[in-house]
Length: 358
Image (cartoon, rainbow, N blue to C red):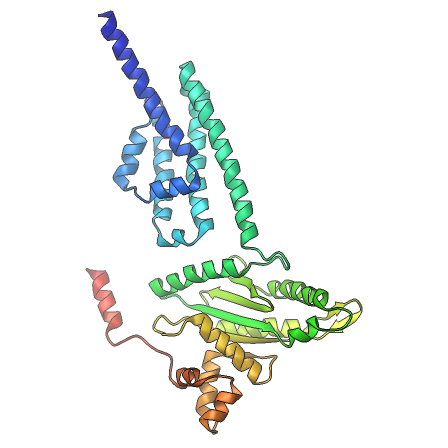
């Protein structure tokens, strides 16, 4: 009889440690492991996972379920594969809730010394993981920031570009892009007595001036793409709105005094603008970059949009070769801008609506 009681007690203790281990493991997973695990979850998996926790977690089960469900809803979104900050935020929120539950058990409910010891280990491990998460975020911020002028860099822009074009393609939302650079920037770098130091000053001062004109710094992306080339990625903005912002930035830079070591440096911008078109065979960045070429070819210090290039090509009564030379475009781009923007094939919208109704 005594052996049977002893065996039953051992089974109960083993089960308790197993339940606590589930809680501890989930709370102390690294973000990448948590992400790989969460991608395989379903609603039933989350419910079974929460129900596997110890009985004295009953009052916290709903908050646990909500935290894990919210994390699952965010992490299953395809955008999480491309957006590191979105993924880290969802995981951190879920693990913070787990940390509170672990601490709650430690303070109020765990009676066995072995259980308390196990939970203390969990809390310590979780704090260590959260410290590593903080450091990872700091290092990640360094990888997406241009160290010279302290704005976002090309890597960050490329990640956001992929995310925003995916959203624009999926949900039919407007998205515009501005690509611009400094006119005759090589002359600034080659100036006697100043050289590249003057060029670095111009880029830093330019970034501060442009950033001050951003209307929505939380959603719009301003980044240094490379050298003296910069980009604006503007979600929920059509081409007309992007042109208005580009003109505002161009005027502000033209009016700003760039003074380096007592010398005034004239700075102007050439800017290319276009709007995302899901039916376009050309990449949006390539179109905006070609508009930038056209802005430089037609006199610099101006904003040229894809619509404006199309309009000019239709109205200028000169030979094709002259137009190509004027806008600094080859035959491929001449043919592209000579046509109206690509539009949806017939019945596409109707088919989409029917699929949604089903």
